[in-house]
Image 1 (cartoon, protein in one colour):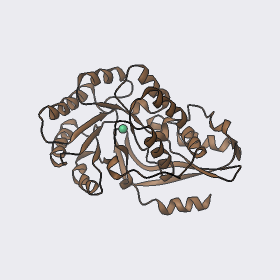
Image 2 (cartoon, helix red, strand yellow):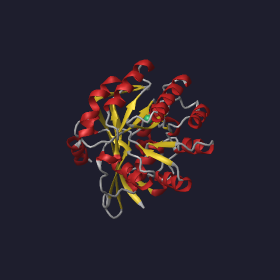
Image 3 (cartoon, helix red, strand yellow):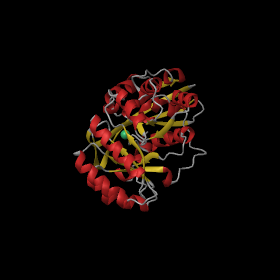
Image 4 (tube, protein in one colour):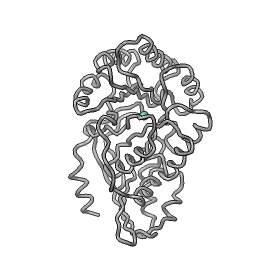
Length: 322
Ligand code: MG
């Protein structure tokens, strides 16, 4: 199949900057793709890289788009190099674009992202009222003593039947990771009527895989890998090295959707699908993948609408523009 190809870069400002162990993030930049096949059928795609997370840079993605001809083929789409995982996702999802038969999952099956630090204490309630029952809180941003104190307040204010995920973005030391896991295990052991700590996400930096593997076997509290499995190649490598804990999959940067499907079907891994702060275009494709490949009934990490202005208007103008 041949496709007429157009693309357009975009910028979106976060309502409040996103703070993680990687630093502050204020503007989301990406590229919207538009394909028209020979029958006139249109497909939309989105390249939303996060280079500090392991994908290509926006510049590299733009360079790739700029060197393509105005007409492209399936051969081109399915041979995008692995060094451009966000491009692989964007082009393949544009190629297989379909909006029929899709029903948006209920808010309860989304995990809502809480801001780091004590601001989380004032934010969960609004999100709870919106229907969220799973929350993710960023840790490894402030001093551990302060975060443990806030954590204590958080679990005593969150309703008992919520789930809480702690995301360190690789920002803990080995000792700190042990302390967090021990604290979470104790919470469970005490049988307190408290929220369930679903998992701790990426406690240590990517290089410390063996330590995370060891931690995953030493504590009850589950560990999810995120930065360690940013791309399909990394995901396969961690699996081969024995990781049987949770894998966080960010479809927007993991790479080729068709190869991801194959891997998940073959190995039946425990996955949590998660956003890369993409627009509605990549989100639709990512949610379709999540619905297809999620197991164990885990909430999907797409509860991030509260980080952006309503997107209808600017997306509409972008669509008209193309
Ligand atoms: Mg994470």
